[in-house]
Image 1: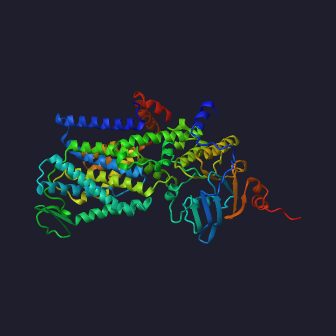
Image 2: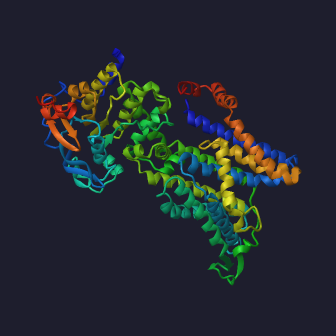
Amino acid sequence: MSEVKRRSATKMVPAPSQGIIPERDLYSAPVLETRHLGIEFGGLKAVEDFNLIIGKTEIAGLIGPNGAGKTTVFNLLTKVYQPTMGTVLLNGRDTAGMNTVQASKLGIARTFQNIRLFGNMTVEDNVRIGLHNQVRYGMFTGIFRLPGYWKQEKAQHERALELLSIFDMQDMAGYRAGSLPYGAQRRLEIVRALATNPSLLLLDEPAAGMNPHETEELMNNIIKIRDRFQIAIMLIEHDMNLVMGICEGICVLNYGRIIAKGTAEDIQNNPVVIEAYLGKKKEG
Amino acid sequence: MKLKKSTVNALISYGIVIVAFIVCQSMISAKAMPRTLKGQMIPICVYIVMAVSLNLVVGISGELSLGHAGFMSIGAFSGAIASTYLLNALGLESEVARLIISIVAGGVTAGVFGVLIGIPVLRLRGDYLAIVTLAFGEIIRNVVNCLYFSVDGMRLNVSFNNPNVAGTIILNGPAGTKGIKAISTFPMGFALILFTLFVVLNLINSRSGRAIMAARDNRIAAEAMGINVTKYKMMAFVTSAVLAGMAGALYGLNFSTFTAAKFKFDTSILVLVFVVLGGIGNIWGSIIAAALLTVLPELLRAFADYRMLIYAIVLILVMLATNNPMLRSVFERLPRALRRKAPGAEAKGGAAQ
């Protein structure tokens, strides 16, 4: 990273934390709290008794074998599915009965496992969609180009470029999002999610399809994002280097149930987790 | 000042429409235009507005609507009623003022129906939405067939299925409108095209337009970004209905009498053909396709019975031509070559490639 870029990136950091895991009181006012969360699909309990607290500015990992229900948890938190059991509290507010849009306004943003960009729109427009609810001008101001339009469009443009600069993507602003390489599309999804000004960011397999070098860069960026925006991040990931490297708390899911919670070290030495991933050691 | 690419494109669009209008108008003044073509000028304007407004729903919002003629019909009849009422009851003599008020009335009425129809229709997706809009188009036509309007002094009388309304009949059920003064003019049609382009292009390049396109490209992601998808689909649908109603009013006031049968399912399909042939989501394509395909049947009158056969062949040829990779690349290079001449737009245009 060149010196110029580094300076422009650090300029906007409000209060850089010292280490990767600074000493903080995480749980006095949690961003997310779930109580006995669960969902049934016609008798099949996809997720059951899911209890989790995520503190402000915490980076949490959600891992588990394929089909464990990790993405279902994300869908429950973002209200794509309505839970059949339990409650979700976002910033202390019960989200019962809310839809995806309302949950987003409460401060939850996500990326998708299979990238869901607006492929026919430009990179900048994708970020502007994320800024949608922070820009306040109506349809008539837009059509008749009243003064509010020009002012807010300009602010939006600047904000979009500022957000894109996190990943050094400001030069790609005019490209069609669908034409970007895979890694850049994943990064753009994160930028777009950040644009909604969330307090909790959910990343669904952010490192999927990335090479070790890109993954390392992503790890640094996730920490950078947390420090700069002071938000909590929860991620699903199969790349254990990434999960063990940056997650302060890890939660392991198997068959829709939490089988272990704790720090990276706790998880690595937990026999139940090892069994879930590698199977039981044959006796004798 | 450095202009945005979209602004430059919009200005070019307005420029081309204005030039086309000036050419046509001077041909009319110089009596250089064939009489049959002259009579087609207002319908061409109407169908251009219809095609561009339908493109807002089909191309920009991504929902297939097959009932667009219904909104045209609502606009035509409310425009005709408004115009006659203004003349007979309020004594407004100025034709231009009456035409403008009638067009606005047509647009507003169609917009109200757009909201009413949009509420149930936009809960559906894909094929189901197409089927239900088709049904609504037919319902509107059949309801208008049973409506009787008359003006009696200052009063506007309405009756359903009962031809005995007091006063001067304006709308006579299945026999259509009666005693309407044909006041539509080509310059007003041109103004309506400009207005439509202004609304649609500005809408696309605004916060609401981006939300509409985001909902089209990926509904789930748009909702996760906090976009109320139904609201923005509704916005596109109602805007489109308003514009279609305005076009309808202009169309209706081009005739002294017309019936609801003019706004059949065929008309909806015809407008959809313009949109599809011009390229879904491509505003310019809609304009060109609407203009050419409205003129074509008239030009083919010489072929008498084989007219529709040749019309169909032309449609097929156009589709083949627009799908030809060589021709396509020529068309794609054309705007870029034009843009290169405009400084300022060049830098951004280059970066987009």
